[in-house]
Image 1 (tube, rainbow, N blue to C red):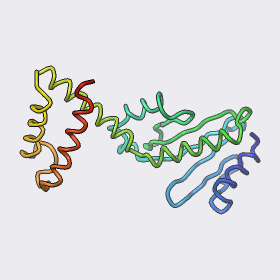
Image 2 (tube, rainbow, N blue to C red; image 1 turned 90 degrees about the vertical axis):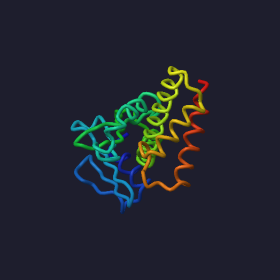
Image 3 (tube, rainbow, N blue to C red; image 1 turned 90 degrees about the horizontal axis):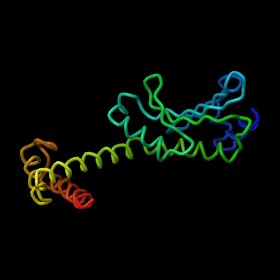
Image 4 (tube, helix red, strand yellow; image 1 turned 180 degrees about the vertical axis):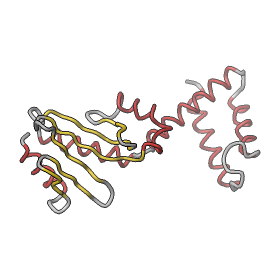
Length: 186
């Protein structure tokens, strides 16, 4: 892709009013929800597209899940840490980049932004539930005994919020039961 093709594609996707030329070979797209940066390398041979997702401190507990997603799920885009920010990043040689690939990469970056912590939190939660299942089985506990322990932890305030309403606690415990039942026999 040429410099002009990149600029035209960005303008076509976001409208000329949303696109700001920062310097020759660099553009910024600002929408009410996100900001995308398009940067050509000094020699204009590589394009990097960046989207800030969240502060690194907020992402820190989930770094293992983000790195796993890089390996398994993110396709041609990646999570990266730089300047205390978790970014979505796409890099490609301009020589072999085509419009469809750039469009797809932009859509994937926006998807990473919209997903935020949801997938990482779900992956971490499943990992922790698997650890609970494993520990319970090693102790010879049944699913029912494990649930009774969790109910006691919530009732005593060791888990959840001590001021949690009984309805809220029941919803949480129902979710625990569903997840434990799902993973118990694996």
